[in-house]
Image (cartoon, rainbow, N blue to C red; front, side):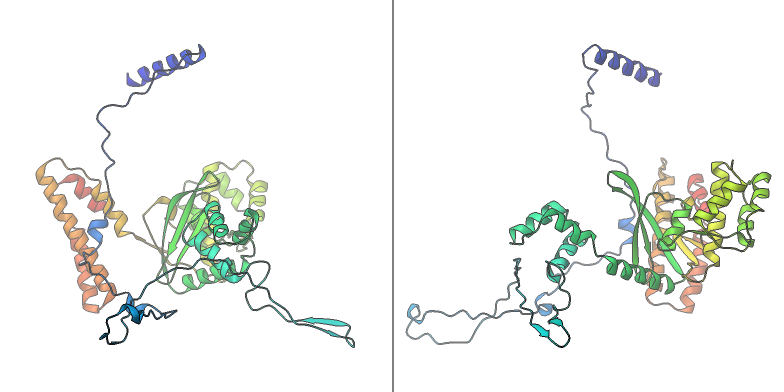
Length: 414
């Protein structure tokens, strides 16, 4: 009934607008809507610490020392000099520095060649390394957009256009891209496990996803249009070109899904044990399976892409992936682990009405987060005895039966 009333009102409003009138105004109620329920686990997972103000002066480097004197004429006749009292002040100087390099110029008649003294390291083009570093730090480190950044530079006396600023931010970054790729490779090679999560972001007015891959050595960010299983592989491969491989692992994965017999016969025509690039693989699919459906194509591409990822040796392969158990992470790595913080949100979403159920949920969450803090303490000081204790405590925690059905079902799922 409510849907029919809403549709009727929408049609009435449209009719009024066609007549040159206005639709029914949306009048907000006097009582504001309650804020959305907070499922964050920040209070539970953070260890309380007493606040203390740290000393800053000991870590400061003195750049300039200035002595301040008093006019003896303003002092009493019996005043005696007792030395100096230091007052340390931090300041910031933002100003332009225009340098004219006078490069020595030599000419050799015998060689018919002119020799010029080179610029110091880091200097190339019209802008020096200090300005370039400042621009990159504010834009990417402080998230300052180009318009206010350009205004700040001009206020400091730097003469540059909006186009020049854009080029400083976007061009000639091959060095940093190569460094980022090297960091990603080293981080993946340095650990058999990684954690991956994504968060929505906007790129040029379009919805995309920021992929956050983190491990013991580094955190790597990558923006992607989607967040499917192939995208997860792209992130784990640091954006390398996709490859596909039909062999035993791919066949095992395809055997676990409801693949049509016709599709299986078509896949038998593909070359076995041969790594294919994406263009070649898509061409072969179009040749042997021209009418392949969306879901069948998705299963096929994912199975062969994961198999190729596991079989290759030129890039580190993640063995264990820690995630929030979203479907796109399933089956990408040999082993998977569930993020404790994400799992805790499922319990916070339970809304028991009876007081005894509320007490049961509260008691379980207390044990749940106490175990989490024990895990963090073990990470700092691991030992064999503590490892065995934690393993037994884990089994005991998730073997709990409370009598509160919703809670017990959630424990079984964990």
